[in-house]
Length: 392
Image (cartoon, rainbow, N blue to C red; front, side, top):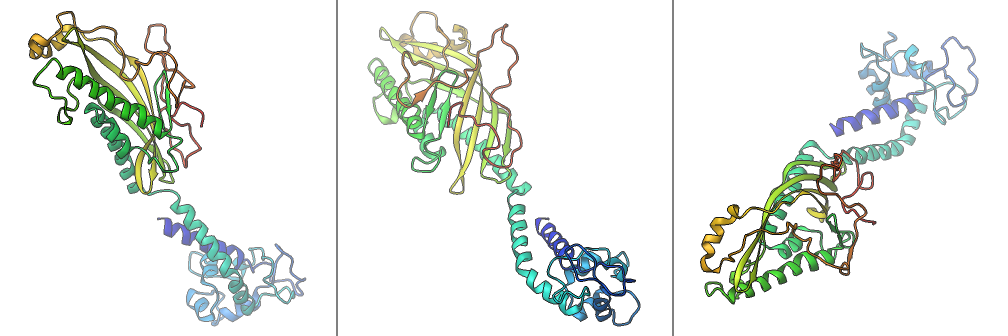
């Protein structure tokens, strides 16, 4: 389709420039010197092309005379004929009447076509570039799946506590052009830059998991404080990416997505030699921006928005308590419901900032809010909002 469109545009451009040789009423006896847009006597040209003098210049006659076929395509009627009357209705372009006698000859038409050919080729290349700037339906579908897969990988890696591996594998490169503008945001904070994300979400999470494993191994002989037991004793968070809305930019270089992400989390802590569970359920949303980096889709910005984060009753973790046996903390499970990553107190660490907008959790007094913004069609980055919730 883009190739056919380009050729049609090219034919039209040549027809309106080259074949615009064509104007002055034939009845004019002594045509005045040509000015741009004024008519010309096209009868000399027509006599050279219409060899059988039937008033219909056919495609075969046009080709035999060596006249530009693009102008024929722009001037032919439903019968496939070019006539003097049809030619005379098109204004003449600058420079076609080389001897300024107000008459068009076959030689002048050929010379003008030769002069215009480089310009037409340039215009054709520009048309082709513009056509290519909009990706095909197949490319858009493949990109949509790639973006959905990225979000799913985020969920799987996060559930396994492999945040550091997630950042290094599926986020923008640390040494790439998008590293400084990468962002991971919540209603309370924004991690700015891929190094901050890697340090806090990646390495910080790993240190927390290692400390939790050490604490658990100290009271449970079945757990060894080795890498083989990574994740034991650590926070477990599982949530999904549902109701996706994904838009791929027309140039195929960036994408935006929005998801609802319901799930649960359990935060075990060692209290007086026992394992206390702090289970929560959370209903949150994600907004994301994605970029094609070195031909591969990567996570660029992620924005979290929490609607409802209730604690879970003891009954919902009864089986886990039973498996803990004597290690189970005997008080009621549960406690203050706190979303993952929201346990910072005091000043924000280096590389963090306050978000421009803090999404409010649900309350009966809260009005209806659609946030993060639902993706909308766009051509290229810069024409739409971003999901970093920060100044860039």
